Length: 128
Image 1 (tube, helix red, strand yellow):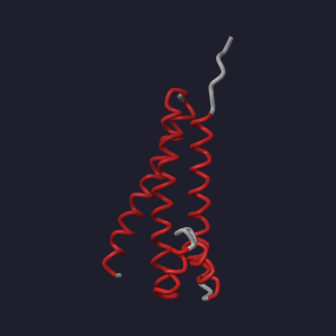
Image 2: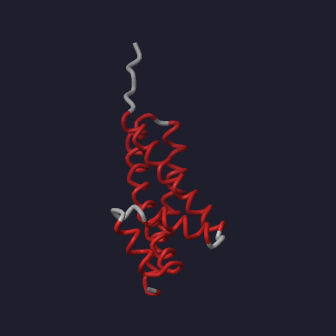
Image 3: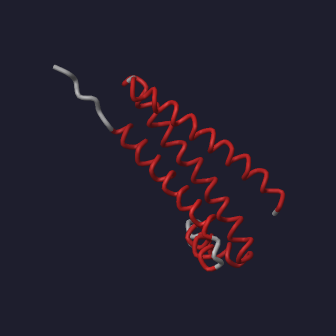
């Protein structure tokens, strides 16, 4: 299990770099209407990278706290149950800092997905 942690750290670094690029590109997208759709697609795609990273982190934490049984139960809930079970395990064990960082990560994931979809779906009205 230890051998996967460098992979998660690598994904985390890519996610942080992606967020930095998103902020800088977002500043340009405010100024230029031509790149807004591409920016929306970038944000939408970035949300999936952040989601994979968050899911893997939760899977490792859940396995560390509740073992293989906790991880299997989480995966049996269509794979999505890993994150909620991880949050429950962290609350039971009083690891509030990690719990808060996962909640913040979920806000970033769904916020970037919603914002990206909104930007992609927004049609510019022609000026008459």
